[in-house]
Amino acid sequence: MAKLTVYDHPLIKHKITRLRDKNVDSKLFRELVNEVASLMIYEVTRELPVIDVEVETPLMTCKGYQVSGDSIAVVPVLRAGLGMMDGIMNVIPMARVGHIGLYRDPKSLKPVEYYCKLPGSLEEKFVILADPMLATGFSAAAAIDLLKKNGAKKIVFACILAAPEGVKALSELHPDVDVYTAAYDEKLNENGYIVPGLGDAGDRIFGTK
Ligand code: URA
Image (tube, rainbow, N blue to C red; front, side, top):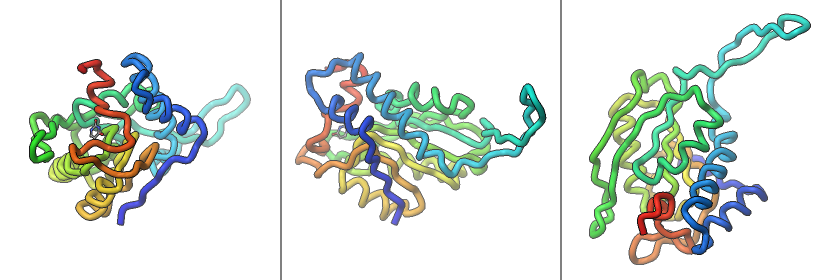
């Protein structure tokens, strides 16, 4: 069973509540998604490797730590995952970035791959897969399959909302991948939407509805 982290923090709870509000427009929605993603990254990166370095303070030399860009990759699932990227990259600007394009077939709800461009030496990287909505878990599982096929060994999944169905599917298909979600919702409805949810994250981020 993968480790599931559900954030229990006043700022995240406040921002998630604003995200759920159907009257929040795309500009504010984007800002909130990025702010939540930034706040989440602190925990998501807790196991990130650091390199020992020396640093000259104005007073003396002392021991310090450095996160190498070569050790970390962030991979948003297109298109909604892009909505989390500014927030993530503000906190870890040294990270390499890959992209995985998947869309959900509206009938089968199964993911279809249409794009994959990943950083090199993935096997040495701490890989953060980002997608705001963990619904059925099919897209996340397919994206993780692709990452593993490309050599990734350490993968964590970061989302804004998760449904129990998605967490269950992911922990069965990829028990080695830890899941971080800002909120954990009740269930999926008959159309595969998370309820109470926040609607279609991609549409709300990009204003396509
Ligand atoms: N994708 C979304 O954008 N919203 C959902 O509720 C489920 C999947």
